[in-house]
Length: 163
Image (cartoon, rainbow, N blue to C red; front, side, top):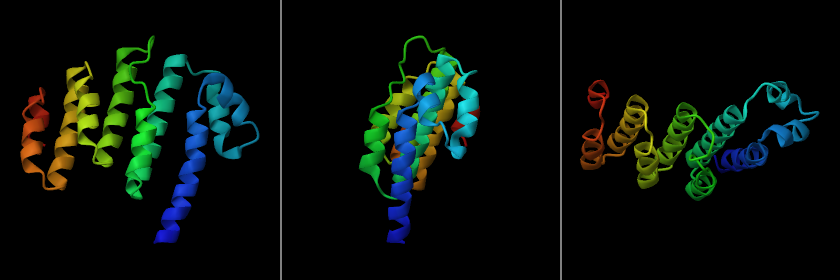
């Protein structure tokens, strides 16, 4: 299993390099000739800066989750700390979507304080409630029932409190 984790870390390292370079111009040049990213090259011409922000944020959050999956929590924290969810000029819904992905990654890495800070900064009540419900679920999965109840009590959307 250690060999599999090492291979996973190697692949994630490469994915991280690519994801960190995501912006409209560098994506175009870095992915030239890479079959795996040919779809990205096609998207570059049609993605707005806000969509590029969302794509990069969610991609990095997913990579951080995978690092957490293989026990590299510190690497996950390092990646997540680089993300600026408060990017200027990005519509609130896109920021919220990126924030949900980042909060989920922090939760997966058992970095609950950071996950809660990100989730609580989401302005949309339904999206915020969904992110908080995921954090509460993770607390339950890890046997932290008092923390789960505390988070559940902050969920504004009644339909999500009981899930």
